[in-house]
Amino acid sequence: MLILKSVQTKVCTDGSLMKEYVLDEPLTENFLIFLERFGTVRHLEQLKKPFFSFEKEHFISIKGFIGDRNVEVRYKKEFQDLVADYFHLLLFYEREGQPGISRLKGIEETIRQKMETRLDSAERKGI
Image: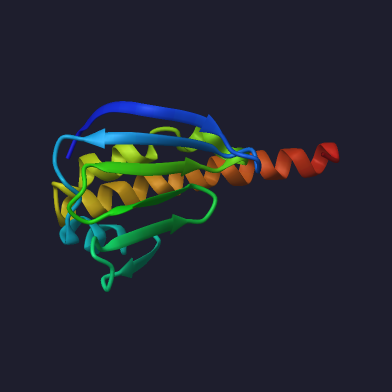
């Protein structure tokens, strides 16, 4: 899957950044299975259009409907600069299967280390 365009961007009341994207193909069950390797997926299959949400703590949350090409992505306030490309990375590495999972896990670890460094620095400065 690829992002065709960003149709809406707004800052939420909690300071997070929400972006709505249009993808080149509909969201699939296989994408949800892939997402389960990286965070918490909730799937409401009983709706007319099956809804899902994905949460990766300190990274992003994703909401959408299976079979739809539109998706809402929220980037957490504290680390927006570090996770700005995370949704793009999920889309890219999903098509690689297991090798993609391993590569993305490594990228995640690097991002987490940067997050910890920032938090440690903020604590030392008393922020």
